[in-house]
Image (cartoon, rainbow, N blue to C red; front, side):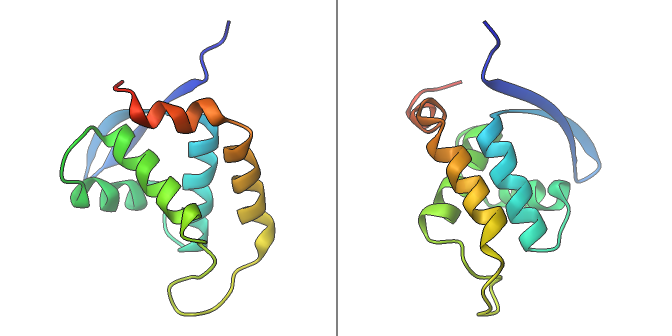
Length: 107
């Protein structure tokens, strides 16, 4: 059985690290980066710099979950973004309840 967790390498502040996330969280993270017109590495670096505890994978999951639960329908400048990518990410997250449930488990 294939693991639902996907491990990817990412460069944060010039250092290469590995992050393990379920595919719906990778998709959501990519959507947020595209929405903010930034790179995935820059977004993950910002999440990493603001986390207060827990590991990076958990911080990313909570960030993505919070973004979409809060509506995530603005660029931060008050303008609506196209709904297609958001709906795709929301649908992917809703289709993976085990991924969301993993938030309460340690890695």
